[in-house]
Length: 285
Image (cartoon, rainbow, N blue to C red; front, side, top):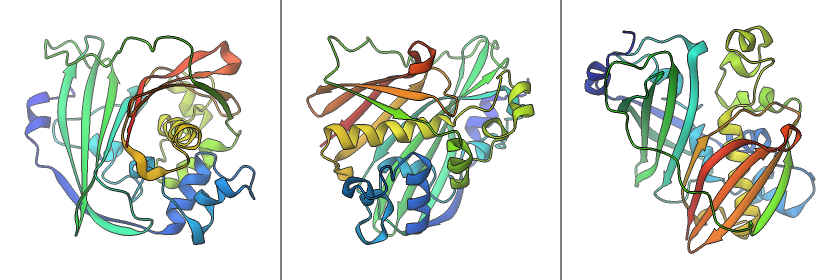
């Protein structure tokens, strides 16, 4: 079996220094659709260095996402075909507001391995801290198709009851044709998002958008719409990737406001509201 759960869980964490500058933050923001309209004061918070705010989801790419998903797939006990890999979900906990430039130590390990029968799920945890203490914790849930069935723990269910009633706000966000090509410059060079031939090998008609790009676009919509544009209010952000997005489509983002919590559902408008992000929660101050 290409995945040895016991060996993967026992492996020593990988640590390394990461760093980022304003330019990295600006590039990430452009990659998730910021800057439209280019002179809008609300958008300049994401694009202009003199007034730059950093969206917490930048944590998923800071230091080019290192140690990230690809690094995690080379951990001891893990030997899988990249074409069988899908990003199943993402959780981010922010311990304090992210600085617009910084250096930190990122420590990555496989925190859990679950057997879903037809797939294995790896939970890849990255903890990041600088000289002042913890900054953020990222958990990426990675599905590896065809690698389940060894009788291991199925793990917890990520599915929630759907939000009740009509959403408090609904917005639509277009995805540019070149969105994936721009977003990948922040560090995720998986050919699934750029190479048509590789996408076909993975079972898709054409390259798909990075799930973490949709993740960032969604958080930006929540912050801009319900949190007054204040990125520092975000405490944690969790989602399950329920479907793919193709560059050129439109995201429909529905939001339900609660006490210090926003529930979110995202769908693709052009495919009859096909689900894209589900079980999505933003906890905030």
